[in-house]
Image 1 (cartoon, rainbow, N blue to C red):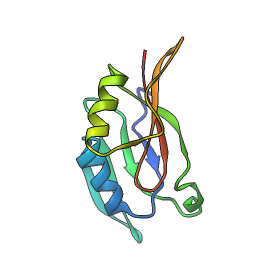
Image 2: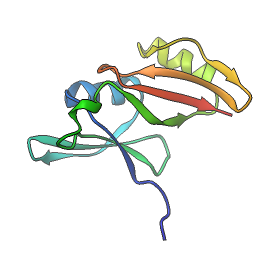
Image 3: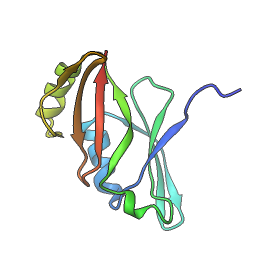
Image 4: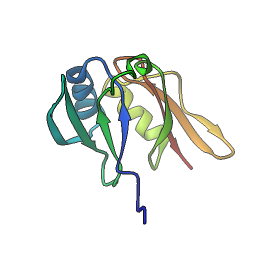
Length: 120
């Protein structure tokens, strides 16, 4: 049976730029980096999560670069994580917002992709 989501893909134009952002600013670590066609297959580990992030653009998906990522990165404290990431130069759309379902903030990567950061 299915046990978890192995990875989520992030289409990108500049893999090196994205690799630097996700490792140096976001704190993810490389688990795989190997040639694949005209690109590289780069898998990143997210903390202690079983789910990773892949920096790779399948053919025909180039138009997805710079769009909204349909998912959410979880953390224990959005306000604290927002402060830490902002200090590292991560761009946020605005300050964290509290909602009945939890707190969230939206950040961008260097190519304009937008991501939700949330907690309960």
